[in-house]
Amino acid sequence: MTIDEILEEMENLLVEATRVPFTNKRVIEEDDMTRLIDELQEALPGEILEAGRILSERRRIIEEAQKEAQSTIEQAKAYVERITDENAITKQAHEQAAEIVQKAHNTARDLQCDALKYAEEVFKHLSSNLGGAMEIVQRGHNDVLAALNGARDEEQKQPSRD
Image 1 (tube, rainbow, N blue to C red):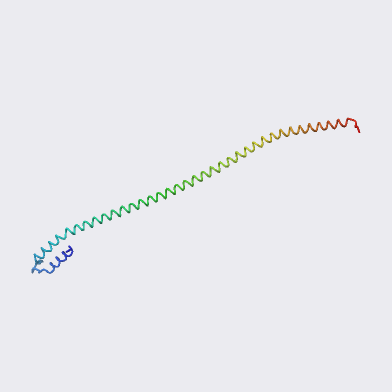
Image 2 (cartoon, rainbow, N blue to C red):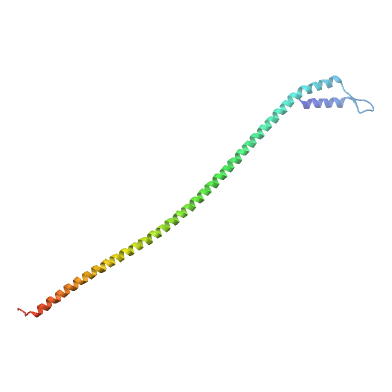
């Protein structure tokens, strides 16, 4: 018999008991009440043990749920941190890429400027050398012209042999 059934039977025993006139008392069969008390004493330890087992199981389930919830929270935090780190890494990579591109543009501009300066120097040197060479060529040309003119003049001074 369960405790609830025993208590219900005790209640029935009390309700069905004879009243003592002019009092608030009832006459209950001692043997019936003793039997119910004995059954209650036998049932209580089992019920208490069952209640204790249920409470222990309840605690275990709650602890397990709390651990699982904590694990889920930690996983979510780790995921958020990883995403944040990946976002920070991506942002940093974009910043570094922009910096590298800017440096490349600066280097290209500097190289172009240096190349133009070098070309200017080469042209100055070439122009200077060509100017000297032209002067030599011009002097040679003048010398040839002078020699040609001198030869013509000599030719004109000599009588014709025809």
